[in-house]
Image 1: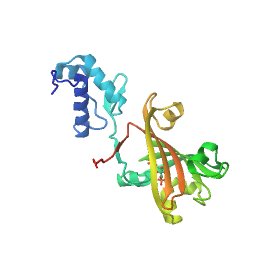
Image 2: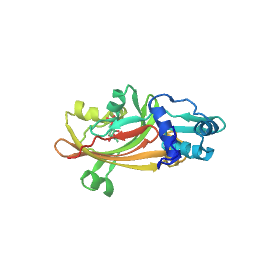
Image 3: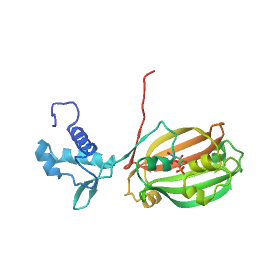
Image 4: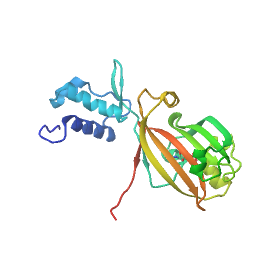
Amino acid sequence: MIDKQSPIPIYFQLVEKIQKEIEQAILKPGDVLPSEREYADTYDISRMTVRQAITKLVNDGYVHRKKGTGTFVNESKIDQPLQGLTSFTEDMRERGFVPSNRMLSFQVREASDYIAGKLNIALGAQVYEIERIRLADDQPMALETTWVPCDVITGLTEEVIYDSLYNYIESKLGLAIGSASQVIESSIVNEREMNLLSLPEGAPVLLIERMTFLADGRPFEFVKSRYRADRYRFRIQMSRS
Ligand code: 16G
């Protein structure tokens, strides 16, 4: 129910109500939401307030509007814990999706000042620069650019990268992956990302930068990813020490 006396704004109460119905699968992916008028009548609130709530749900990636037909529930978001240092391939398999990659570019080049600084290698040292679209069940999830120093991770090929980088490092090279530091920021898609990730103009994305180290402390990858914010959310467990 909507509590008009509550200090919580009415539109936000409606947002939470609809979100809960999506989480409890009362509203399922592909379902059409009741119309603005129906919500307004049901809760005795203005259509403006309903519109404000739906706009927030659109911006947060839970629903999308289709001109002339209505507002539809999006595919559910992938809930990704941040504790484990896992790969995209592992994450998707664990959830029952089939992971795949679309290679946009794979090349060996000289490290720029910026990349050399990130990977702690000499300016001009050789690095693999790999750009992939990461897909789950053939749906684009993320656009990922990876820089890997050639003398740390030897023998990388396009074939390897079509599969899993982490699997190659551990199973083929026998190296132990140790730790990573990751930063997450919000952004919106640019035109190129819009096309590559099949997203509408202005769609939100999560920019993720990861620096990853082998167990012996050597940095082996610097990665910039753009994850679809309508399909991903990150979860972290916290304790007060
Ligand atoms: C994930 C990692 C990325 C890593 C990749 C390896 C994030 C934000 N990024 O996408 O840093 O390079 O997995 O995946 O999680 P792969 O082993 O499937 O190639």
